[in-house]
Length: 137
Image (cartoon, rainbow, N blue to C red; front, side, top):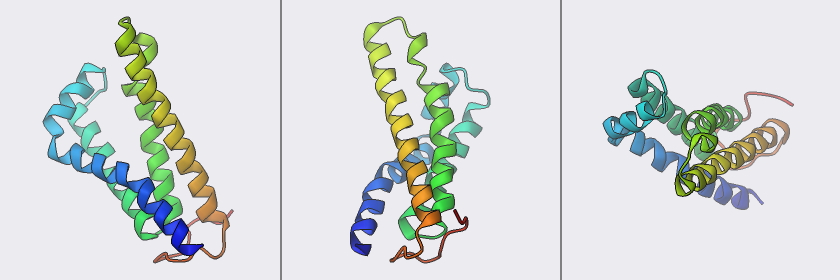
């Protein structure tokens, strides 16, 4: 069972770690898009969200306070869904559909990260982690 959980953790964080890399490697382009969505201090927002993605993803992957790492991902995903993917503002049907997909993806991932938080904070035998949980539910 420990190996199955580890494989799940690896698969779960691939998206977050690759996105974190993009936030740091393409900060200027991402800041331009972020600014077009009306987010204040776009460069700072891109770097801060990249840091949350990297820290949360590495925490879950390595099993170092993975419960906290899961919460960091939730903290990044929920505001991103509402600030960056406001499909209700789009007038073009294709743009609206694309933003709705991204909004729903962020909500679903936030829900999964929240469940992962509860799992890490509640289960006594996590197996294949470096530390135990920071929180105790």
